[in-house]
Image (cartoon, rainbow, N blue to C red; front, top):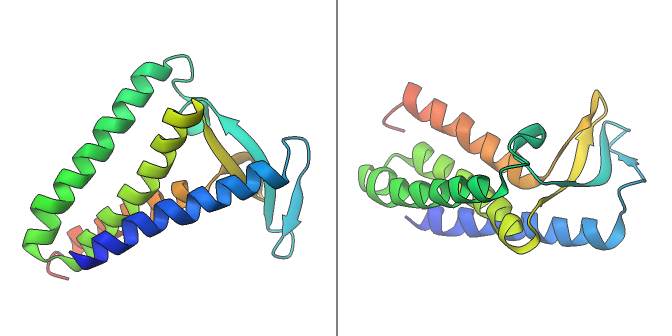
Length: 149
């Protein structure tokens, strides 16, 4: 239970701090390469889901996002924590923290702040919340392969 209560809010806070820093220090016309030019820092506002999907259905997208976060929290409390599956609990915590950060943006700004991409695919711009969601999904898959971890 403690892992979940620490990881989810920490993911949320780290991403929100990065988003505030990105908005305050970058604009959407400049690109700053870091880590041997493998990661590109650039500001982007995404009004839809991945690749702008559902950007014309913002109300529906927000509703789905909110329901997803509620479901993640319910799953975490009832299934992962009660069953004691550490990998599942940690995966759900990463998923919840990342999803909550992006939902917070949608409620506050009506769009999600993205701020980095990879050199090999510069037109796909992400944020740490997206990476936390991805990591959480990987951990969920691992928890299914090793169910008693």
